Length: 194
Image (cartoon, rainbow, N blue to C red; front, side, top):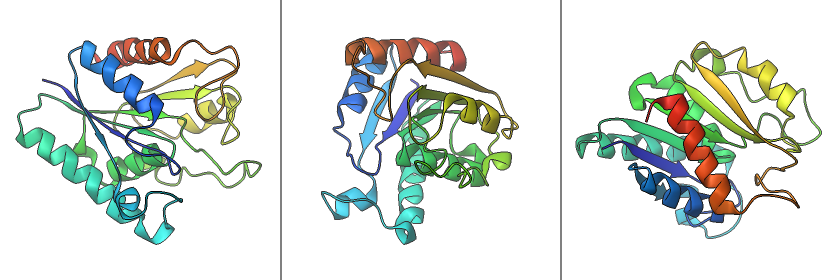
């Protein structure tokens, strides 16, 4: 059975509404899902991660992927919202065999209002297939900026836009969260061949 390991953003945890909705939608599609708290969140229930501890977060993701493979997963997918997605890409760039494809939700391309501070130095080493799900009003990078940055990726990549959505992938006229999750699953199924 395919397995998806989902990680949260800097301000969230494994029970973030988006991750819960994705868990249910992927399970309905026959994919085993493991939502995990990153070590920084296990250490503190609130507050952002400390930059010096990011490697520990990446190691935890790698361990979860290894456990999934040892448990007999046919394919392992890694997914993360914002910070979790960024750590996932950094891990996959340094250890390409860690997963079969990545699901990147609201990748934090740069800090808000600082477009010159791109977080893509590792992308030329990121050969795994990457599906980006991005809001068109995300202050961490516009869709056009993300499209441009995706040219750095040597592997297969695709962008699913959420019209009018911000960093949380929600907008005032957003579809219900379960419908958004179902749409993400359909797009990922096409992208990764579920």
